[in-house]
Length: 117
Image (tube, rainbow, N blue to C red; front, side, top):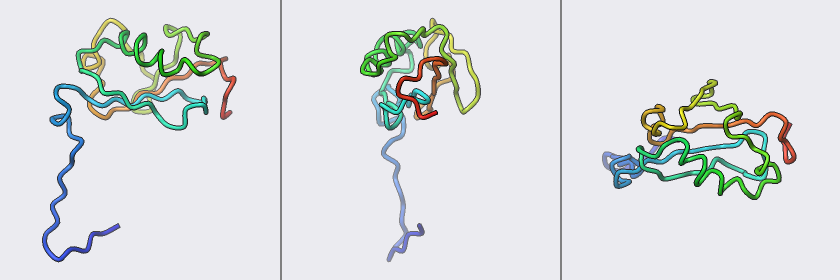
């Protein structure tokens, strides 16, 4: 929608990486699991390893899902920029190419107790 203003309008984004004290926002979603209505929004240092992301906040956030205990994180199908992708669990988010406000998605074939499909 266009902006109608009486003087020049200068929008200043407040969600730039510079405003997060060395951390970055990362969105993570679990495809075909409707218990979670939207992607998780995590604020993490870019030095966080992918394994720390999965075994820490991601495991805790997905725990309420009935399928969570059965997830084998090494067999999960990952997508980044809507393309199949294989993360390195030992390397950092930055080393895995995950930047500020990027979204990663994961699929767990065979685990669809609360599925949209």
